[in-house]
Length: 363
Image (cartoon, rainbow, N blue to C red):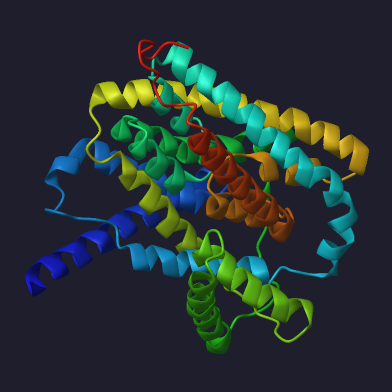
């Protein structure tokens, strides 16, 4: 038992080392979020080219990933300031707009997967959900969806958005932005107490978030704990740049390893459909963001990240990297997830996806 554990531990260390190395290459090349994108590319390349050589039953350590997701939650919570409170009146426009986005994005995705991809109704519907990954998979399995295809599309949605969004914003700005432009979240010199508190709050927040069952508990729990303390001036954490980079490497590695076991045909078709779907959703979110920016004077980039349908953790990390208000972005993504899960539950309860006798899979 001990030998396989050591093998898995060593393999995880190797994946992270490759991810860090690619991160430095991406940083040298001037890409945004270099350590997350570099780690994602390196682990995805390993998964596709040598996935069959991975140790038996290998899985990227979930608790290790949760810890660093918690660290990101602490980072976001540490950014909470009175500026967020000042944005609350303007959220009266942006929060309802998220609900509209969820409905329109899901409808468009369903059409793409049904008409272009040729998916059956349950698979197209649950693959197209712009949030609620685990719920979409669970509900889809109960309604007879193709779980392998559904799972691939849901994970590819997150990966493609993570790959496209930072680069697209840099192109839009006409110059590197965020971490690629030398931005750092570290306002001072961190000491061992800051590092210990960061990990301590991550663990405590994860426990509290899981206990009260908030969405994305591993991120939201630490965020709420540290955010409340920061808002009242109880703590003033200084988070070192190497810890921010480490969190990016861990997240990128976990995403890239989702490509293990994919056949070339599934990968090509899945990537094509995912790029089409993600481009549609990013364009839809962009249009809504432009309209909101004109009505509310909210920062356009912050809105675009808030409406980008990636994972809440990944989008929050992008917000941190690009100096957008990370608490604002995270709140909107939590609303998106809750809205998407609510829509899935309502449609499932109404039985719209259940084939009727004599009608088969017809529309």
